[in-house]
Image (cartoon, rainbow, N blue to C red; front, side):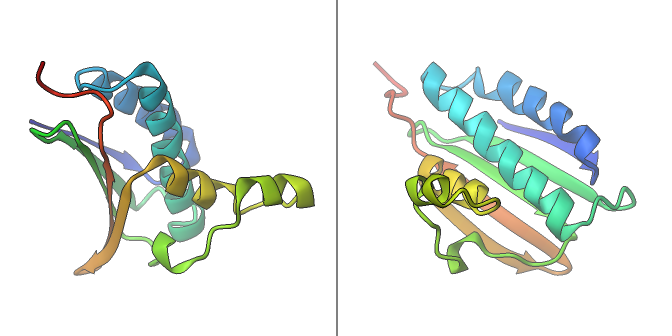
Length: 142
């Protein structure tokens, strides 16, 4: 089953995204820790898409679909009309280094890459699509 939410590209709508993700992933075979980290990662990527790629433009929309697989994996598909940015093309700085250097910025991408198992980024028409896959550590069948 696929669950979907569409929001205007404004940071005031991020709470709606967090609430939606929290509600949906409770249905899947994920530990509490995985659920918390996924909400954090999806919030971060949506915030980046809204702020940096769509420039808080409420005439644009961000769509998030969540789907579980038979093997327990969860797929998040984020689709918007913002500027293209491929998380995989940027080298992530280790979190420890960011803290040590007291750098602002860069923490979100590093965080997403630590939490999510696979990130695919591609263009489809005038949309940028981020497809994120998280494998479950809990077996889907006992």
